[in-house]
Image (spheres, rainbow, N blue to C red):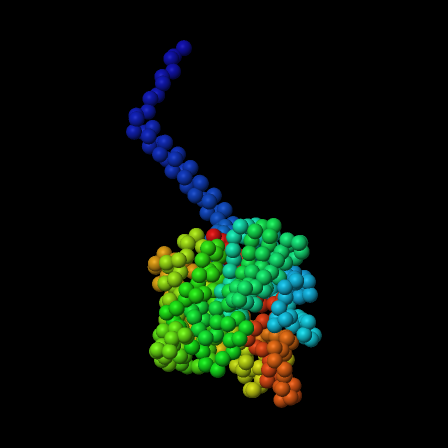
Length: 407
C-alpha cells in the first residue's frame, strides 16, 4: 500500500487563510450589528437620551422654574384651624374668606419633583439646632408657615412659643430644636426696628450699623434672610451717619438702590466675619405684590381684592418687583461666594408672581378701626402684599426644606 504523503503548506499560505477567515468573521459580525441597530437603534438612542436627561435633571434641576398644578388631594399640607400658632394677619378663612381653592395648588418644577415635606425628618435634622428667619413681615409669614408645617407632628406638651422684643422662638422641646423669627425689616439698624410700632412717615437707615440685631443671629445653624418690601416706598431714603441718640448725626437723602447696596454690604461683611462656615445660609428673593390689576389684564384701579384665579401668562412679572434691586442681591451673594461664604438664593419671585388670588385682601385682622370710606370701598384696604395660610409661603418652605437636605 502506497504511503500517503502529508502536504505541508508554506507558512505564508497558512497565515493568509487565517486572515481571510478573520476578515470574514468580522464582516459577518458587522452585518449582524447593522441589522440589529436598524431595528433597535431608535430605542437605544431614546434610552440613552432618557438616561442623560434624567441625570441632568437630578443634578441641575431648577426648582424655581415650573408651573402651578391643582392638587386638592395632597394640599393644603395642614389646616388653618389646626395650626396652634396661626397668625390673625394670615388666617383668611377665620376672617371670612369663602373661596379657599387657593390652598390647593402645588408647585411643579419642569424637570424634577420637590421632595414631600416631612415634619419629623426636618425636626430630626434640627435636633439640638436653631433655624432662624430674619427680616420683615413676609419672612415672619414664612416662619409662621414653617411652625404650622411641623406643629401637628409635635404633641402639645412638647412645644412652646415665647417672644422677647424682636425675637420670637418656637421650640420643639423633645428635639431641643427651635424655629425662630427675628424682626429686622431692613437688616441694618433703622427707625422701623420696633416690632410693634414701626409705621413711620419717613424711614431712616443706619447703613453701617448691624450689631444691635446681628448679635441675636450668632450660633444659629440655619439662617434665612429677606429684605425688600420696606425699601419700596420712595426713590430716595434718608441715611444716618451717627446714632439716633446723637444730636450731631449726619443725615443725607440717598438713592434707594444705593442705600440697599450699602446695607447689604454691611450685612455681607458681618456674615464673613461672624458666621461659622458650617451654617446654612439662605436669602429669600422679593415677594411680589398685586396692587395693579391692569398689569395682568384686569380693570385699572382694581387690585387683588375679589381675585379667585391665578395668572396663567407664562413669565408674568408685575412692576412691583424691581429686577434692579434683585441684581444688587445677586452681586452681593456672588461677592460673598468669592470670599468663601455660600448664601443660597431662594428665588420665590417668579413662582409667586402668578398667585394674585392668594393674598389676604380684606380677610385678616384689621389692626386699626376701618373708616366709613374703607368700609364702602373694600379694595381700598385690601392687603395685596402678604399671603394667606395655608398657601404660597408653604411652597417657599418646601423649597427651603429641599435645599436644607441637599447639603
